Image 1 (cartoon, rainbow, N blue to C red):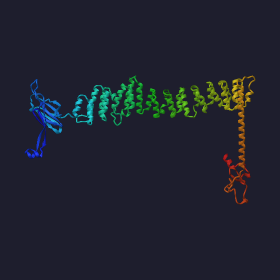
Image 2 (tube, rainbow, N blue to C red):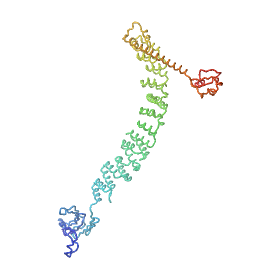
Image 3 (tube, helix red, strand yellow):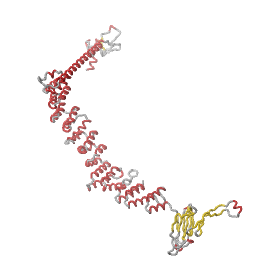
Image 4 (spheres, one colour):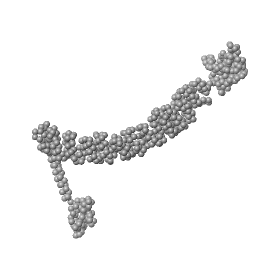
Length: 609
Protein backbone atom coordinates (compact mmCIF):
# COMPACT_ATOMS: atom_id res chain seq x y z
CA UNK A 1 0.00 0.00 0.00
CA UNK A 2 1.33 3.39 -1.00
CA UNK A 3 -0.14 6.71 0.09
CA UNK A 4 0.96 9.94 -1.46
CA UNK A 5 -0.70 13.24 -0.71
CA UNK A 6 -4.37 12.18 -1.29
CA UNK A 7 -3.79 9.18 -3.57
CA UNK A 8 -3.74 5.57 -2.46
CA UNK A 9 -2.27 2.84 -4.56
CA UNK A 10 -2.54 -0.87 -3.86
CA UNK A 11 0.28 -2.94 -5.28
CA UNK A 12 1.29 -6.59 -5.31
CA UNK A 13 4.81 -7.92 -5.20
CA UNK A 14 5.41 -10.73 -7.62
CA UNK A 15 8.33 -12.74 -8.89
CA UNK A 16 9.50 -12.11 -12.42
CA UNK A 17 9.18 -14.92 -14.97
CA UNK A 18 12.24 -16.72 -16.34
CA UNK A 19 11.84 -15.03 -19.71
CA UNK A 20 11.89 -11.60 -18.07
CA UNK A 21 14.99 -12.49 -16.12
CA UNK A 22 16.78 -13.70 -19.26
CA UNK A 23 15.89 -10.74 -21.44
CA UNK A 24 16.43 -8.07 -18.81
CA UNK A 25 18.99 -7.34 -16.25
CA UNK A 26 16.46 -6.65 -13.47
CA UNK A 27 15.76 -7.77 -9.89
CA UNK A 28 13.98 -11.05 -9.25
CA UNK A 29 10.85 -9.38 -7.76
CA UNK A 30 8.82 -6.44 -8.96
CA UNK A 31 5.89 -4.34 -7.72
CA UNK A 32 2.72 -4.17 -9.82
CA UNK A 33 0.03 -1.51 -9.09
CA UNK A 34 -3.40 -3.12 -8.77
CA UNK A 35 -5.77 -0.40 -7.61
CA UNK A 36 -5.52 3.36 -7.35
CA UNK A 37 -8.10 5.67 -5.85
CA UNK A 38 -8.40 9.23 -4.64
CA UNK A 39 -9.06 10.11 -0.99
CA UNK A 40 -10.85 13.13 0.43
CA UNK A 41 -8.06 13.64 2.96
CA UNK A 42 -4.36 14.09 2.99
CA UNK A 43 -2.88 10.74 3.87
CA UNK A 44 -1.04 10.64 7.20
CA UNK A 45 -0.66 6.86 7.28
CA UNK A 46 -2.00 3.53 5.92
CA UNK A 47 -2.41 0.05 7.35
CA UNK A 48 -4.17 -3.26 6.66
CA UNK A 49 -7.05 -4.65 8.76
CA UNK A 50 -7.92 -8.12 7.48
CA UNK A 51 -9.38 -7.41 4.02
CA UNK A 52 -9.99 -3.78 4.85
CA UNK A 53 -7.84 -0.64 4.85
CA UNK A 54 -7.14 1.71 7.78
CA UNK A 55 -6.38 5.30 6.78
CA UNK A 56 -5.17 8.16 8.97
CA UNK A 57 -6.43 11.25 7.16
CA UNK A 58 -6.07 14.99 7.65
CA UNK A 59 -8.82 17.22 6.21
CA UNK A 60 -7.64 19.22 3.22
CA UNK A 61 -9.56 22.39 4.14
CA UNK A 62 -8.96 24.45 7.22
CA UNK A 63 -11.67 25.22 9.74
CA UNK A 64 -13.74 28.04 8.12
CA UNK A 65 -14.28 29.72 11.49
CA UNK A 66 -10.70 29.67 12.82
CA UNK A 67 -8.75 29.20 9.62
CA UNK A 68 -6.69 26.49 11.34
CA UNK A 69 -6.32 22.77 10.78
CA UNK A 70 -9.19 20.42 11.60
CA UNK A 71 -9.06 17.24 13.66
CA UNK A 72 -7.48 14.17 12.00
CA UNK A 73 -9.74 11.25 11.08
CA UNK A 74 -9.21 7.47 11.38
CA UNK A 75 -11.08 5.76 8.55
CA UNK A 76 -11.83 2.09 7.81
CA UNK A 77 -12.57 1.38 4.12
CA UNK A 78 -13.10 -1.71 1.99
CA UNK A 79 -12.77 -2.43 -1.70
CA UNK A 80 -16.05 -3.06 -3.51
CA UNK A 81 -17.14 -2.70 -7.11
CA UNK A 82 -13.79 -1.29 -8.22
CA UNK A 83 -13.75 1.38 -5.55
CA UNK A 84 -13.04 1.75 -1.85
CA UNK A 85 -16.06 2.48 0.31
CA UNK A 86 -15.87 4.06 3.71
CA UNK A 87 -17.05 1.62 6.42
CA UNK A 88 -16.52 3.81 9.47
CA UNK A 89 -14.71 6.95 10.54
CA UNK A 90 -13.74 8.36 13.91
CA UNK A 91 -12.59 11.92 14.55
CA UNK A 92 -9.56 11.94 16.83
CA UNK A 93 -9.27 14.31 19.76
CA UNK A 94 -5.60 15.29 19.76
CA UNK A 95 -4.15 18.14 21.72
CA UNK A 96 -2.89 20.99 19.51
CA UNK A 97 -4.33 19.58 16.32
CA UNK A 98 -5.08 23.14 15.16
CA UNK A 99 -1.36 23.78 14.67
CA UNK A 100 -0.47 20.49 13.03
CA UNK A 101 -0.17 19.57 9.38
CA UNK A 102 -0.26 16.18 7.70
CA UNK A 103 3.46 15.70 8.20
CA UNK A 104 3.05 15.99 11.99
CA UNK A 105 1.11 12.70 12.18
CA UNK A 106 2.40 9.17 11.93
CA UNK A 107 0.57 5.78 11.89
CA UNK A 108 2.36 2.68 13.19
CA UNK A 109 0.89 -0.85 13.16
CA UNK A 110 1.23 -4.10 15.16
CA UNK A 111 -0.39 -6.47 12.69
CA UNK A 112 -0.30 -9.48 15.06
CA UNK A 113 -2.42 -7.63 17.64
CA UNK A 114 -4.49 -5.53 15.25
CA UNK A 115 -3.34 -2.43 17.06
CA UNK A 116 -2.80 0.97 15.46
CA UNK A 117 -0.69 3.73 17.03
CA UNK A 118 -1.52 7.32 16.00
CA UNK A 119 1.49 9.45 16.88
CA UNK A 120 1.37 13.24 17.11
CA UNK A 121 3.77 15.73 18.66
CA UNK A 122 1.90 15.68 22.00
CA UNK A 123 -0.21 12.48 22.01
CA UNK A 124 -0.08 8.83 21.13
CA UNK A 125 -3.46 7.22 20.56
CA UNK A 126 -3.87 3.46 20.44
CA UNK A 127 -6.73 2.15 18.30
CA UNK A 128 -7.93 -1.43 17.87
CA UNK A 129 -11.00 -3.10 16.37
CA UNK A 130 -14.13 -3.08 18.50
CA UNK A 131 -14.07 -6.40 20.61
CA UNK A 132 -16.62 -8.22 22.80
CA UNK A 133 -15.62 -6.29 25.91
CA UNK A 134 -16.14 -3.01 24.10
CA UNK A 135 -19.51 -4.20 22.85
CA UNK A 136 -20.65 -5.32 26.29
CA UNK A 137 -19.42 -2.09 27.86
CA UNK A 138 -21.29 -0.03 25.29
CA UNK A 139 -24.51 -2.08 25.73
CA UNK A 140 -24.26 -1.80 29.50
CA UNK A 141 -23.61 1.93 29.34
CA UNK A 142 -26.74 2.36 27.23
CA UNK A 143 -28.77 0.08 29.58
CA UNK A 144 -29.26 -2.63 27.02
CA UNK A 145 -28.55 -5.28 29.63
CA UNK A 146 -30.47 -8.15 28.09
CA UNK A 147 -28.54 -7.81 24.85
CA UNK A 148 -25.28 -7.59 26.80
CA UNK A 149 -26.14 -10.83 28.64
CA UNK A 150 -27.01 -12.51 25.36
CA UNK A 151 -23.64 -11.49 23.88
CA UNK A 152 -21.81 -12.89 26.90
CA UNK A 153 -23.72 -16.16 26.76
CA UNK A 154 -22.74 -16.55 23.11
CA UNK A 155 -19.05 -16.47 24.07
CA UNK A 156 -19.38 -18.75 27.11
CA UNK A 157 -20.51 -16.27 29.75
CA UNK A 158 -17.21 -14.51 30.39
CA UNK A 159 -14.67 -12.20 28.71
CA UNK A 160 -11.52 -10.59 30.01
CA UNK A 161 -13.48 -7.69 31.50
CA UNK A 162 -17.08 -8.85 31.86
CA UNK A 163 -19.14 -11.85 32.96
CA UNK A 164 -22.80 -12.79 33.13
CA UNK A 165 -22.62 -12.27 36.88
CA UNK A 166 -21.22 -8.74 36.83
CA UNK A 167 -23.50 -7.54 34.04
CA UNK A 168 -26.44 -9.38 35.65
CA UNK A 169 -25.88 -7.66 39.00
CA UNK A 170 -25.83 -4.28 37.27
CA UNK A 171 -29.02 -5.19 35.45
CA UNK A 172 -30.63 -6.35 38.71
CA UNK A 173 -29.77 -3.06 40.39
CA UNK A 174 -31.26 -1.23 37.42
CA UNK A 175 -34.51 -3.22 37.64
CA UNK A 176 -34.82 -2.62 41.36
CA UNK A 177 -34.26 1.09 40.88
CA UNK A 178 -37.28 1.00 38.58
CA UNK A 179 -39.27 -1.08 41.14
CA UNK A 180 -39.49 -4.05 38.76
CA UNK A 181 -39.06 -6.56 41.57
CA UNK A 182 -40.61 -9.59 39.89
CA UNK A 183 -38.33 -9.20 36.87
CA UNK A 184 -35.39 -8.69 39.19
CA UNK A 185 -36.24 -11.92 41.05
CA UNK A 186 -36.37 -13.91 37.82
CA UNK A 187 -33.03 -12.42 36.76
CA UNK A 188 -31.54 -13.23 40.16
CA UNK A 189 -32.25 -16.94 39.70
CA UNK A 190 -30.52 -16.76 36.31
CA UNK A 191 -27.32 -15.05 37.39
CA UNK A 192 -26.83 -16.54 40.84
CA UNK A 193 -27.15 -20.21 39.93
CA UNK A 194 -25.31 -22.14 42.68
CA UNK A 195 -23.34 -19.21 44.10
CA UNK A 196 -24.49 -19.05 47.74
CA UNK A 197 -22.71 -15.81 48.58
CA UNK A 198 -24.10 -14.09 45.50
CA UNK A 199 -27.60 -15.34 46.34
CA UNK A 200 -27.43 -14.03 49.87
CA UNK A 201 -26.11 -10.64 48.81
CA UNK A 202 -28.84 -10.16 46.23
CA UNK A 203 -31.63 -11.36 48.55
CA UNK A 204 -30.58 -8.80 51.13
CA UNK A 205 -31.18 -6.12 48.50
CA UNK A 206 -34.80 -7.28 48.29
CA UNK A 207 -35.25 -7.41 52.05
CA UNK A 208 -34.00 -3.83 52.42
CA UNK A 209 -36.94 -2.61 50.33
CA UNK A 210 -39.44 -5.12 51.88
CA UNK A 211 -39.68 -7.11 48.66
CA UNK A 212 -38.35 -10.46 49.84
CA UNK A 213 -41.69 -11.97 48.86
CA UNK A 214 -40.90 -11.29 45.20
CA UNK A 215 -37.83 -13.50 45.27
CA UNK A 216 -39.12 -16.22 47.63
CA UNK A 217 -40.33 -18.40 44.77
CA UNK A 218 -36.91 -18.42 43.09
CA UNK A 219 -34.41 -18.95 45.90
CA UNK A 220 -32.70 -22.35 46.41
CA UNK A 221 -34.71 -24.63 48.70
CA UNK A 222 -32.85 -27.93 48.56
CA UNK A 223 -30.41 -29.11 51.19
CA UNK A 224 -27.64 -29.23 48.56
CA UNK A 225 -28.07 -25.54 47.67
CA UNK A 226 -29.16 -24.36 51.10
CA UNK A 227 -28.38 -20.75 51.98
CA UNK A 228 -27.87 -19.30 55.43
CA UNK A 229 -30.86 -19.94 57.70
CA UNK A 230 -31.00 -16.22 58.39
CA UNK A 231 -31.98 -15.58 54.75
CA UNK A 232 -35.00 -17.88 54.95
CA UNK A 233 -36.01 -16.47 58.32
CA UNK A 234 -35.94 -12.91 56.98
CA UNK A 235 -38.25 -13.91 54.14
CA UNK A 236 -40.60 -15.74 56.52
CA UNK A 237 -40.66 -12.75 58.82
CA UNK A 238 -41.70 -10.44 55.99
CA UNK A 239 -44.52 -12.80 55.02
CA UNK A 240 -45.58 -13.02 58.66
CA UNK A 241 -46.01 -9.27 58.84
CA UNK A 242 -47.73 -8.55 55.54
CA UNK A 243 -49.09 -11.76 53.93
CA UNK A 244 -50.70 -14.38 56.17
CA UNK A 245 -51.76 -16.69 53.33
CA UNK A 246 -48.30 -16.51 51.79
CA UNK A 247 -46.74 -17.25 55.17
CA UNK A 248 -48.87 -20.38 55.59
CA UNK A 249 -48.10 -21.47 52.03
CA UNK A 250 -44.33 -21.36 52.40
CA UNK A 251 -44.46 -22.98 55.84
CA UNK A 252 -46.23 -25.89 54.14
CA UNK A 253 -43.92 -25.99 51.12
CA UNK A 254 -40.46 -25.26 52.50
CA UNK A 255 -38.29 -27.89 54.11
CA UNK A 256 -38.22 -27.11 57.82
CA UNK A 257 -34.48 -27.74 57.83
CA UNK A 258 -33.89 -24.53 55.87
CA UNK A 259 -34.59 -22.31 58.88
CA UNK A 260 -34.69 -22.42 62.67
CA UNK A 261 -38.26 -23.37 63.51
CA UNK A 262 -37.86 -22.20 67.10
CA UNK A 263 -37.09 -18.67 65.92
CA UNK A 264 -40.13 -18.60 63.63
CA UNK A 265 -42.42 -20.04 66.33
CA UNK A 266 -41.34 -17.28 68.69
CA UNK A 267 -42.08 -14.64 66.04
CA UNK A 268 -45.51 -16.15 65.32
CA UNK A 269 -46.45 -16.21 69.00
CA UNK A 270 -45.41 -12.58 69.42
CA UNK A 271 -47.32 -11.62 66.30
CA UNK A 272 -50.47 -13.34 67.57
CA UNK A 273 -50.36 -11.15 70.65
CA UNK A 274 -50.51 -7.98 68.57
CA UNK A 275 -52.87 -8.85 65.74
CA UNK A 276 -56.55 -9.67 65.43
CA UNK A 277 -56.46 -10.34 61.69
CA UNK A 278 -56.17 -13.84 60.15
CA UNK A 279 -55.47 -15.46 63.50
CA UNK A 280 -56.71 -18.84 62.28
CA UNK A 281 -54.22 -18.80 59.43
CA UNK A 282 -51.34 -18.05 61.77
CA UNK A 283 -52.52 -20.77 64.17
CA UNK A 284 -52.55 -23.31 61.37
CA UNK A 285 -49.00 -22.35 60.44
CA UNK A 286 -48.04 -22.54 64.12
CA UNK A 287 -49.41 -26.08 64.35
CA UNK A 288 -47.30 -27.10 61.35
CA UNK A 289 -44.21 -25.55 62.91
CA UNK A 290 -44.84 -27.49 66.13
CA UNK A 291 -45.04 -30.66 64.03
CA UNK A 292 -41.68 -29.83 62.45
CA UNK A 293 -40.26 -29.59 65.98
CA UNK A 294 -41.89 -32.95 66.86
CA UNK A 295 -43.94 -31.18 69.54
CA UNK A 296 -47.06 -33.04 68.50
CA UNK A 297 -48.92 -32.40 71.74
CA UNK A 298 -48.74 -28.65 71.16
CA UNK A 299 -49.71 -29.14 67.53
CA UNK A 300 -52.72 -31.19 68.66
CA UNK A 301 -53.83 -28.48 71.08
CA UNK A 302 -53.41 -25.82 68.41
CA UNK A 303 -55.40 -27.75 65.82
CA UNK A 304 -58.22 -28.32 68.30
CA UNK A 305 -58.24 -24.65 69.24
CA UNK A 306 -58.37 -23.88 65.56
CA UNK A 307 -61.04 -26.54 64.95
CA UNK A 308 -58.97 -27.79 62.01
CA UNK A 309 -59.63 -31.26 60.61
CA UNK A 310 -55.95 -31.99 59.97
CA UNK A 311 -55.88 -32.98 63.63
CA UNK A 312 -57.12 -36.47 62.66
CA UNK A 313 -54.24 -37.00 60.25
CA UNK A 314 -51.85 -35.77 62.95
CA UNK A 315 -53.21 -38.27 65.48
CA UNK A 316 -53.12 -41.28 63.15
CA UNK A 317 -49.77 -40.42 61.57
CA UNK A 318 -47.98 -40.02 64.91
CA UNK A 319 -50.10 -42.53 66.88
CA UNK A 320 -51.12 -39.97 69.49
CA UNK A 321 -53.97 -42.06 70.87
CA UNK A 322 -52.87 -41.76 74.48
CA UNK A 323 -52.89 -37.97 74.16
CA UNK A 324 -56.55 -37.76 73.15
CA UNK A 325 -58.18 -39.51 76.11
CA UNK A 326 -59.41 -36.18 77.45
CA UNK A 327 -60.13 -34.71 74.01
CA UNK A 328 -62.69 -37.18 72.68
CA UNK A 329 -65.57 -34.71 72.95
CA UNK A 330 -63.59 -32.00 71.14
CA UNK A 331 -62.81 -34.40 68.30
CA UNK A 332 -66.44 -35.52 68.05
CA UNK A 333 -67.57 -31.90 67.94
CA UNK A 334 -65.06 -31.13 65.20
CA UNK A 335 -65.97 -34.04 62.90
CA UNK A 336 -68.10 -36.77 64.41
CA UNK A 337 -67.79 -39.22 61.51
CA UNK A 338 -64.00 -38.98 61.20
CA UNK A 339 -63.57 -39.18 64.95
CA UNK A 340 -65.69 -42.33 65.16
CA UNK A 341 -63.89 -43.91 62.20
CA UNK A 342 -60.53 -43.24 63.83
CA UNK A 343 -61.61 -44.52 67.25
CA UNK A 344 -63.24 -47.67 65.89
CA UNK A 345 -60.79 -48.66 63.16
CA UNK A 346 -57.63 -48.07 65.16
CA UNK A 347 -59.12 -49.37 68.42
CA UNK A 348 -56.30 -47.72 70.35
CA UNK A 349 -58.50 -45.83 72.80
CA UNK A 350 -60.35 -48.04 75.33
CA UNK A 351 -64.11 -48.07 74.89
CA UNK A 352 -64.74 -47.24 78.53
CA UNK A 353 -62.61 -44.08 78.13
CA UNK A 354 -64.70 -42.97 75.16
CA UNK A 355 -67.94 -43.83 76.97
CA UNK A 356 -66.93 -41.83 80.02
CA UNK A 357 -66.07 -38.80 77.89
CA UNK A 358 -69.37 -38.97 76.00
CA UNK A 359 -71.61 -39.92 78.90
CA UNK A 360 -73.40 -36.56 78.90
CA UNK A 361 -73.56 -36.36 75.10
CA UNK A 362 -75.75 -39.30 74.23
CA UNK A 363 -76.04 -38.57 70.51
CA UNK A 364 -72.27 -38.84 70.09
CA UNK A 365 -72.25 -41.89 72.38
CA UNK A 366 -74.96 -43.54 70.29
CA UNK A 367 -73.07 -42.96 67.03
CA UNK A 368 -69.85 -44.30 68.53
CA UNK A 369 -71.39 -47.42 70.10
CA UNK A 370 -73.38 -48.08 66.93
CA UNK A 371 -70.14 -48.13 64.89
CA UNK A 372 -68.28 -50.03 67.60
CA UNK A 373 -70.91 -52.78 67.75
CA UNK A 374 -70.37 -53.52 64.05
CA UNK A 375 -66.70 -54.41 64.52
CA UNK A 376 -66.78 -55.83 68.06
CA UNK A 377 -69.24 -58.56 68.96
CA UNK A 378 -68.54 -58.90 72.68
CA UNK A 379 -71.89 -57.23 73.44
CA UNK A 380 -70.65 -55.35 76.48
CA UNK A 381 -72.59 -52.22 75.61
CA UNK A 382 -75.57 -53.77 73.83
CA UNK A 383 -77.90 -53.06 76.73
CA UNK A 384 -77.06 -49.37 76.53
CA UNK A 385 -77.37 -49.47 72.76
CA UNK A 386 -80.99 -50.67 73.03
CA UNK A 387 -81.89 -47.50 74.91
CA UNK A 388 -79.89 -45.31 72.51
CA UNK A 389 -81.45 -46.91 69.42
CA UNK A 390 -84.88 -46.33 70.93
CA UNK A 391 -84.03 -42.66 71.40
CA UNK A 392 -82.10 -41.81 68.24
CA UNK A 393 -82.74 -44.41 65.53
CA UNK A 394 -85.76 -46.61 66.06
CA UNK A 395 -85.41 -48.13 62.56
CA UNK A 396 -82.28 -50.01 63.59
CA UNK A 397 -83.67 -51.32 66.86
CA UNK A 398 -85.56 -54.40 65.64
CA UNK A 399 -82.72 -55.71 63.49
CA UNK A 400 -80.32 -55.13 66.39
CA UNK A 401 -82.57 -57.04 68.79
CA UNK A 402 -82.67 -59.95 66.35
CA UNK A 403 -78.90 -60.04 65.79
CA UNK A 404 -77.68 -59.68 69.35
CA UNK A 405 -77.91 -62.02 72.32
CA UNK A 406 -76.05 -59.75 74.72
CA UNK A 407 -78.67 -57.38 76.06
CA UNK A 408 -81.00 -57.82 79.08
CA UNK A 409 -84.26 -58.85 77.43
CA UNK A 410 -86.46 -57.63 80.26
CA UNK A 411 -84.85 -54.17 80.24
CA UNK A 412 -85.13 -54.04 76.46
CA UNK A 413 -88.82 -54.98 76.74
CA UNK A 414 -89.42 -52.20 79.25
CA UNK A 415 -87.76 -49.68 76.92
CA UNK A 416 -89.96 -50.80 74.04
CA UNK A 417 -93.10 -50.76 76.19
CA UNK A 418 -92.39 -47.24 77.40
CA UNK A 419 -92.03 -46.09 73.79
CA UNK A 420 -94.87 -48.22 72.35
CA UNK A 421 -92.53 -50.00 69.93
CA UNK A 422 -94.96 -52.80 69.11
CA UNK A 423 -92.98 -54.81 66.51
CA UNK A 424 -90.03 -54.88 68.88
CA UNK A 425 -92.31 -55.90 71.76
CA UNK A 426 -93.69 -58.77 69.67
CA UNK A 427 -90.17 -60.05 68.98
CA UNK A 428 -89.05 -59.79 72.61
CA UNK A 429 -92.22 -61.40 74.00
CA UNK A 430 -91.85 -64.27 71.57
CA UNK A 431 -88.21 -64.63 72.56
CA UNK A 432 -89.07 -65.05 76.23
CA UNK A 433 -91.89 -67.46 75.38
CA UNK A 434 -94.81 -65.12 75.96
CA UNK A 435 -96.23 -65.75 72.51
CA UNK A 436 -99.81 -65.19 73.58
CA UNK A 437 -99.16 -61.56 74.56
CA UNK A 438 -97.11 -61.09 71.41
CA UNK A 439 -100.02 -62.31 69.28
CA UNK A 440 -102.40 -60.05 71.16
CA UNK A 441 -100.21 -57.00 70.33
CA UNK A 442 -100.15 -57.97 66.65
CA UNK A 443 -103.92 -58.21 66.53
CA UNK A 444 -104.93 -55.34 68.79
CA UNK A 445 -102.11 -52.80 68.33
CA UNK A 446 -100.71 -53.54 64.90
CA UNK A 447 -104.05 -54.70 63.54
CA UNK A 448 -102.25 -56.92 61.04
CA UNK A 449 -103.96 -60.28 60.49
CA UNK A 450 -101.39 -61.38 57.92
CA UNK A 451 -98.56 -60.83 60.40
CA UNK A 452 -100.60 -62.68 63.02
CA UNK A 453 -100.99 -65.66 60.68
CA UNK A 454 -97.25 -65.58 59.87
CA UNK A 455 -96.43 -65.37 63.57
CA UNK A 456 -98.55 -68.43 64.36
CA UNK A 457 -96.95 -70.26 61.46
CA UNK A 458 -93.42 -69.47 62.74
CA UNK A 459 -94.24 -70.53 66.30
CA UNK A 460 -96.08 -73.69 65.16
CA UNK A 461 -98.17 -73.68 68.33
CA UNK A 462 -101.73 -75.01 68.24
CA UNK A 463 -102.77 -72.87 71.20
CA UNK A 464 -101.67 -69.76 69.32
CA UNK A 465 -103.86 -70.75 66.40
CA UNK A 466 -106.73 -71.17 68.86
CA UNK A 467 -106.11 -67.69 70.30
CA UNK A 468 -105.93 -66.21 66.82
CA UNK A 469 -109.20 -67.82 65.83
CA UNK A 470 -110.89 -66.52 68.98
CA UNK A 471 -109.77 -62.98 68.19
CA UNK A 472 -110.68 -63.25 64.52
CA UNK A 473 -114.16 -64.82 64.53
CA UNK A 474 -115.77 -61.52 65.51
CA UNK A 475 -114.35 -59.83 62.39
CA UNK A 476 -115.67 -61.21 59.11
CA UNK A 477 -112.74 -59.78 57.09
CA UNK A 478 -110.32 -61.69 59.33
CA UNK A 479 -112.38 -64.86 58.91
CA UNK A 480 -112.05 -64.57 55.14
CA UNK A 481 -108.22 -64.37 55.34
CA UNK A 482 -108.07 -67.24 57.82
CA UNK A 483 -110.23 -69.43 55.60
CA UNK A 484 -107.86 -68.78 52.70
CA UNK A 485 -104.62 -69.46 54.61
CA UNK A 486 -105.31 -71.69 57.62
CA UNK A 487 -105.72 -74.87 55.60
CA UNK A 488 -101.96 -75.24 55.16
CA UNK A 489 -101.19 -75.34 58.87
CA UNK A 490 -104.05 -76.66 61.08
CA UNK A 491 -107.32 -78.49 60.85
CA UNK A 492 -109.84 -76.01 59.34
CA UNK A 493 -112.53 -77.36 61.61
CA UNK A 494 -110.94 -75.35 64.44
CA UNK A 495 -111.99 -72.20 62.62
CA UNK A 496 -115.28 -73.33 61.15
CA UNK A 497 -116.62 -74.59 64.47
CA UNK A 498 -115.95 -71.19 66.08
CA UNK A 499 -117.70 -69.09 63.43
CA UNK A 500 -120.85 -67.68 64.94
CA UNK A 501 -124.15 -68.39 63.22
CA UNK A 502 -125.36 -65.53 61.06
CA UNK A 503 -121.89 -64.14 60.48
CA UNK A 504 -121.65 -62.62 57.00
CA UNK A 505 -118.38 -63.67 55.39
CA UNK A 506 -117.27 -62.10 52.16
CA UNK A 507 -116.17 -64.44 49.37
CA UNK A 508 -117.14 -67.40 51.52
CA UNK A 509 -117.41 -69.87 48.64
CA UNK A 510 -113.98 -69.05 47.22
CA UNK A 511 -112.45 -68.99 50.71
CA UNK A 512 -113.89 -72.42 51.59
CA UNK A 513 -112.73 -73.84 48.29
CA UNK A 514 -109.21 -72.50 48.88
CA UNK A 515 -109.22 -73.79 52.46
CA UNK A 516 -110.34 -77.31 51.45
CA UNK A 517 -107.82 -77.43 48.63
CA UNK A 518 -105.00 -76.41 50.98
CA UNK A 519 -106.18 -78.83 53.65
CA UNK A 520 -106.34 -81.76 51.23
CA UNK A 521 -102.89 -80.79 49.99
CA UNK A 522 -101.66 -80.78 53.57
CA UNK A 523 -103.17 -84.24 54.16
CA UNK A 524 -101.61 -85.52 50.94
CA UNK A 525 -98.22 -84.25 51.97
CA UNK A 526 -98.59 -85.79 55.42
CA UNK A 527 -99.63 -89.16 53.96
CA UNK A 528 -96.73 -89.10 51.53
CA UNK A 529 -94.30 -88.24 54.30
CA UNK A 530 -95.73 -91.03 56.44
CA UNK A 531 -95.31 -93.54 53.63
CA UNK A 532 -91.75 -92.45 52.99
CA UNK A 533 -90.95 -92.67 56.71
CA UNK A 534 -92.37 -96.19 56.99
CA UNK A 535 -90.51 -97.35 53.90
CA UNK A 536 -87.28 -95.94 55.25
CA UNK A 537 -87.93 -97.60 58.61
CA UNK A 538 -88.35 -101.07 57.12
CA UNK A 539 -85.37 -100.64 54.80
CA UNK A 540 -83.12 -99.62 57.67
CA UNK A 541 -84.43 -102.42 59.90
CA UNK A 542 -83.74 -104.97 57.20
CA UNK A 543 -80.18 -103.69 56.83
CA UNK A 544 -79.71 -103.94 60.60
CA UNK A 545 -80.91 -107.54 60.79
CA UNK A 546 -78.82 -108.55 57.78
CA UNK A 547 -75.75 -106.95 59.28
CA UNK A 548 -76.24 -108.63 62.63
CA UNK A 549 -76.71 -112.04 60.99
CA UNK A 550 -73.58 -111.73 58.87
CA UNK A 551 -70.63 -113.78 60.08
CA UNK A 552 -67.41 -112.28 61.36
CA UNK A 553 -64.08 -113.47 60.01
CA UNK A 554 -61.77 -114.55 62.85
CA UNK A 555 -58.09 -115.26 62.11
CA UNK A 556 -55.29 -116.63 64.25
CA UNK A 557 -54.11 -113.08 64.79
CA UNK A 558 -57.11 -112.25 66.99
CA UNK A 559 -56.28 -111.98 70.68
CA UNK A 560 -58.48 -112.04 73.76
CA UNK A 561 -58.91 -108.49 75.01
CA UNK A 562 -58.61 -109.72 78.62
CA UNK A 563 -55.84 -112.34 78.74
CA UNK A 564 -54.21 -111.36 75.45
CA UNK A 565 -54.10 -115.05 74.48
CA UNK A 566 -54.81 -116.31 70.99
CA UNK A 567 -58.43 -116.89 70.14
CA UNK A 568 -57.76 -119.78 67.77
CA UNK A 569 -55.41 -122.57 68.98
CA UNK A 570 -54.41 -125.87 67.37
CA UNK A 571 -55.03 -127.98 70.46
CA UNK A 572 -58.80 -128.33 70.50
CA UNK A 573 -58.73 -129.99 73.92
CA UNK A 574 -57.71 -126.74 75.56
CA UNK A 575 -59.96 -124.55 73.41
CA UNK A 576 -62.82 -122.57 74.97
CA UNK A 577 -65.95 -120.86 73.76
CA UNK A 578 -65.55 -117.38 72.25
CA UNK A 579 -67.46 -114.09 72.29
CA UNK A 580 -66.81 -111.86 69.21
CA UNK A 581 -68.56 -108.52 68.88
CA UNK A 582 -69.32 -106.54 65.73
CA UNK A 583 -66.61 -104.10 66.78
CA UNK A 584 -64.20 -107.07 66.31
CA UNK A 585 -63.13 -107.18 69.93
CA UNK A 586 -62.82 -110.84 70.97
CA UNK A 587 -62.97 -112.59 74.36
CA UNK A 588 -62.71 -116.07 75.82
CA UNK A 589 -65.95 -116.86 77.59
CA UNK A 590 -63.93 -117.91 80.57
CA UNK A 591 -62.21 -114.52 80.66
CA UNK A 592 -65.45 -112.59 80.98
CA UNK A 593 -66.62 -111.76 84.53
CA UNK A 594 -68.04 -114.97 86.02
CA UNK A 595 -68.35 -116.27 82.48
CA UNK A 596 -71.32 -114.01 81.82
CA UNK A 597 -72.00 -113.32 78.18
CA UNK A 598 -72.23 -109.53 78.04
CA UNK A 599 -74.51 -107.96 75.48
CA UNK A 600 -72.09 -105.08 74.94
CA UNK A 601 -68.35 -105.02 74.36
CA UNK A 602 -66.71 -104.11 77.64
CA UNK A 603 -63.85 -102.34 75.84
CA UNK A 604 -66.10 -100.09 73.79
CA UNK A 605 -68.39 -99.46 76.74
CA UNK A 606 -65.43 -98.29 78.83
CA UNK A 607 -64.31 -95.92 76.06
CA UNK A 608 -67.80 -94.39 75.78
CA UNK A 609 -67.93 -93.82 79.51
